[in-house]
Image (cartoon, rainbow, N blue to C red; front, side, top):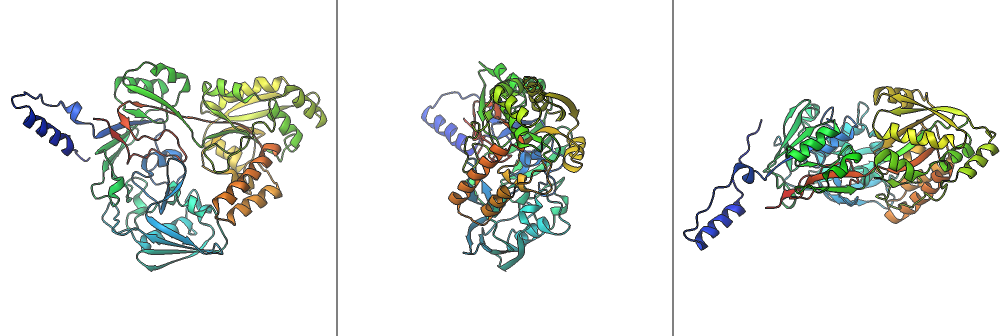
Length: 509
């Protein structure tokens, strides 16, 4: 446990001294510990991470604690979703797209004192792409054929094929730089280069981070001395902790139906932002009747997305018509491609040979949005003569086994959290069992260019294909529901990548 001082800041001390000088004889009251403690933050999360190393496991809760706080990457994704330099201060891409040369920051040290340089960067990437890698995004590094380190400040990646998304992928939590001597222990005691150091983890309760006084980037140094992540699963308990002041912030509040309970609270504010959480009802397109595009289109046209959002998430969410969010480059609103139209849906079913509908089962994980969405969809499908049975499915273990591994399902519903993951429909295998050569060609083409404008145009074409083919029923993007103290500054309202980036967070004095 690291003990932290609660002494007034230097700026506050100067202000007190000035006041004393100007107001001789004025009796000043001592600050209470609570008033002096505004360099600490108690932040709530619904889910406790299973470990603290995002390079060996995928759950978003890992990144929400340590990404950009403890660990950093060669590049980073800012709150506008843009790529920014980080441990790499610049880079050049060869005209053929096969060589990436990075110039690294100098004078950077890991929290254990080990130097960050080209050798440790090579170690991190080799660990992520190697034969024994368990990195959840190992595919990001698949095109890296070899890595050179001409000097301590230069890292050269040689690719086997152009990979236009590589720089973006290097900004993900799975791509952070790790220290060679301590990487094996990062799951429980993470060591990075970030503005905060890992302090302690009380399993089942909290993770504590402490300010890194030796942080290399003085312009982005932490303003907080201590951050405590507290894990509270129950939404009623989350709300109670916020209202009592036990928590200062809950950047991803779990219960939209309780958001209005904070109305009129003198201390707290609520914020509704964007995320990458795309709620979709994926179909097994290798099974009848879902192998018929007309059936999939009919189901899509039977759904009134606004009613789904009202029933599943208290009206808080953004309707989508493809596997893409308004945060993403080249986003196009595709909700009008197959709009809500019961009569046209019935006609499409009849044309496909199902004039009296059919019966199927949706496997619904236990997260609140899934059964709520499924119940609304169930009523809507009944309007076109389709019977949908709802089978609760434990997540993640049973869901992963049934859907991702065995493909033993008709339809499922889940929120896809990965940013810019439209390429999942080109992966083989993937649970939709979707095969479209034209779509696959676009996903290949987007990697053959590093030009953002060209990539955006390609992504636009890809969105249109999915909107018309509907391998999944595209429902809505879940919002980022934030509740925090009005005096807190710098928390991200939107979430272009799973994050609680805290280096810019401070308290108003």
